[in-house]
Amino acid sequence: MMKLKHALMVWLTGFTVSVLGSVFKMESFSFASEVLLAGMLLQMLGGILILYKLITHPKVQDFLNQ
Image 1 (spheres, rainbow, N blue to C red):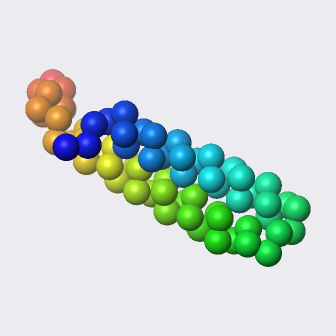
Image 2 (tube, rainbow, N blue to C red):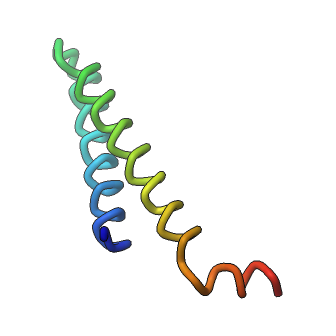
Image 3 (cartoon, rainbow, N blue to C red):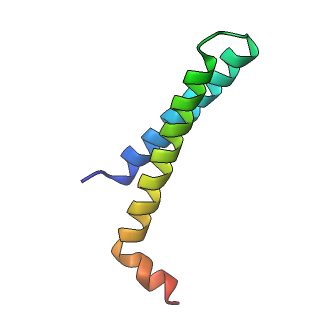
C-alpha cells in the first residue's frame, strides 16, 4: 500500500512541474500548456491520495469524534 510520504512526493512533484510550466509560459514556450496541465494533474492526484490516506487512517475517527 502507498505510504503518506509517497503521496506527498507525488503532490510535490506536481507542484514543481506546475512552477516549471508557469516559467515556460512566461518565456512563451510552445509546450508550456502541456507542462502546466501535467503538473496540475499530478497535484490533483497527490491531493486525492493524501485525502484517502487521512480518511482511512484508524485514528482519524477518534479525532473527529472528540
